[in-house]
Amino acid sequence: MSLPHAILTALLEKPSSGLELTRRFDRSIGYFWSATHQQIYRELGKLEGEGLIRALPSERPARGQKKSYEVLPAGRDELARWTSAPQDPKPWRDALFVRLRAAAVVGTTGLEDDMRRHLGLYQRQLAEYEEIEKRDFGPGRDTAQDRLQHLILRAGIDLLTFWTQWLTNALEEFETLPETTGDSGEGAGNE
Image (cartoon, rainbow, N blue to C red; front, side, top):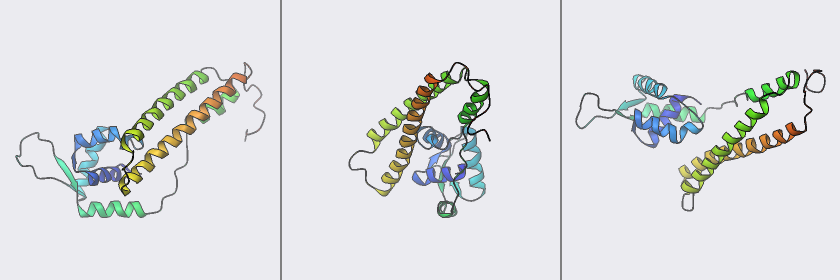
């Protein structure tokens, strides 16, 4: 995924100003592809310079007035090209697993509390996603766009469900660990 393609997608859904785009990123796209306001504005300038988007003409030009942007045919073509191109999954990386591996040799002090914090964060995010699903994807929301957007939301719900279950199980495992962990460095998985 790249920010230019996320912006092209958002602008095809609805022509918007930079401020409107940043708000939409904060409310939807940002759940799975985050970007700062500066990054969005910088990318808008690049996309306009490449002829993929244009600023809509203003009815009353005024100094400091916000620009609204729309996608040009070249931008739509680029998004269609990118959407249809094969991509390999990105390697999965999470510092928590490296920290768990390190805890096996240096001890678990402090890690359990942080895992509980992670669990709380995931539980709150899961509740928010489930509320969005209830609010935005009830009966009658059956267009292709609705179904694909719901598919994305379901992926988030399923991933957060996994993480809350895994962290709950991991914390139960922590309760059974001896006081000191990992002094020997021996055992399975030490390759």
